[in-house]
Image (cartoon, rainbow, N blue to C red):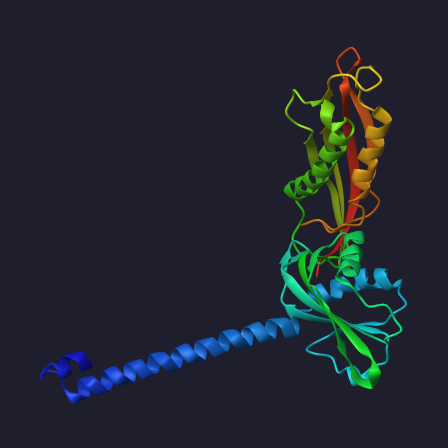
Length: 316
């Protein structure tokens, strides 16, 4: 409109020009208000959501053997009000709840300590998180001076998957949730099958190492806000077909005892690790049997692993 006026167009009235300017001012004001609203919501989410920080308490306790107090804070903690040693967890990014598994949150871990104490390192947090089944990524970390001659170690944790001791899951579990859990175990059983044959002598004609045969919700029961869900399933394990001979000149064979131990270790890795839609499992029971033909003869060294576990979750 201003360009038209500069060319001498006298058809544009003062009223039209004022209305145009008012529309521009209005749009700019609304855009500014929207930005402030988004910023306020982002700030509110980190102030109200501390679910990932609460979940990480378990991992931090494991690292310090329960000997160091841990506090979940909103905002930067006042280090002058606390004695050392002490750990503070501050959630800086809200997490998304995916069926009881928390994803995408970020938590800043601060360890207030004397210079006589060992520092808290990113590898320490990574190891502690792995023990309790969390998937996290730790920043490089830094040590800074704190009041009264103390030090504070600061490490930011990105939470790919963390969960509460008793996850909150409002929806009813389904067979699809059971299959999702069995599929995660299947991946580790495939690695176990592969490890039973030396890498230079592997020949897998059937094209798979492990596959889920069955995954079922056997029973679900809710009592006083706690849901108990029994899951059963079966996974076939198919080690690679060995080929060639060993250094001693004997044909390479599958080490059956090694395979069964590897299967048990793989299942144990999922002990107490929460799964989407189900919650946290109790003891995972398993039975390993050879797969046989109609005559009862084993088919190679294939195994079927039958698995049962009862999961616990809060409903609210």
